[in-house]
Image (cartoon, rainbow, N blue to C red; front, top):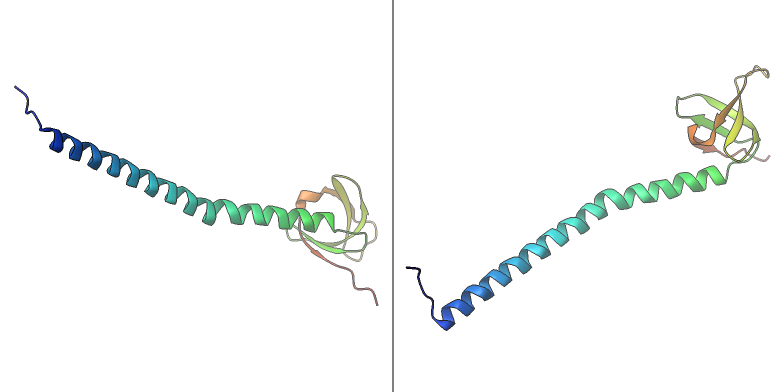
Length: 109
């Protein structure tokens, strides 16, 4: 035979189970918020910064590629740029905009 609980004991057991479930949901919700704040938010801010940097590129700017080469932008299209490397004027390489890691604006003197 099973153990029978009085009405008060059964209500107390149900309330404790609900409170435990609620606290567990709050903990998981807080964990998701913390993970978003420390992982997703910085990544989206960096993505916006890179997009703004690529939009502000102009002909004549000095760029550093993801492979570490420095060059001067000589032409820009929608998805590609043509970069001139070194003092040799014949070393012009077309590359995707996503291959640019840094842009240094040309100084106007």
